[in-house]
Image 1 (cartoon, rainbow, N blue to C red):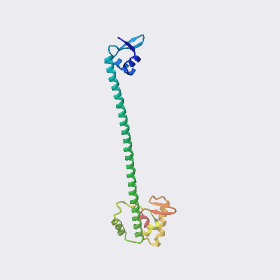
Image 2: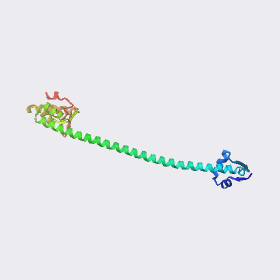
Image 3: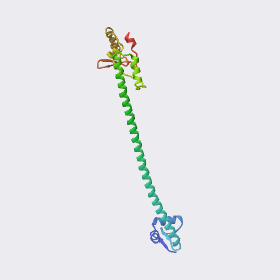
Image 4: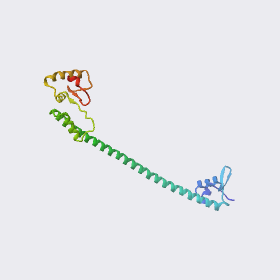
Length: 203
């Protein structure tokens, strides 16, 4: 029986040293240890060993090729995931822009209606007729909230000139007390008739 070192056996069988170690661990090759040095008994088992080692090499090559294929597939899937994520984010951005545009158009429409309503009131038109006109315009299904000046409010209420001064003094007094129903801007008092009641200040 011929014995060789691991390196010599690898060269003899034309395989790697790791392949020789694998065969020794599985028992396909006999191992002899002399003076701390590991030898391989190769003479009797050469044919079977060569066959098995070649098979091992082919298996190792197959595993390596399969790993490369799987790495390529993973990379492809990662790119597709990134593309889909970017596409979803762009769709969300586009939808947000559409919603913002809808609200902008709606706000512009409401401002237009408010202007019509205010104009009609100031010209002493019938209140019910004005609101009906706004409804017929098919514009609102929401409550319109708008702050107007005290001067415009008194005109809307058709307060007589001789009573305006007294009523104005009442509003100024309440405004100084910090009534939340009133807003003072640049020295002028503003009201929100759609939200608050001011009847006690008008009598």
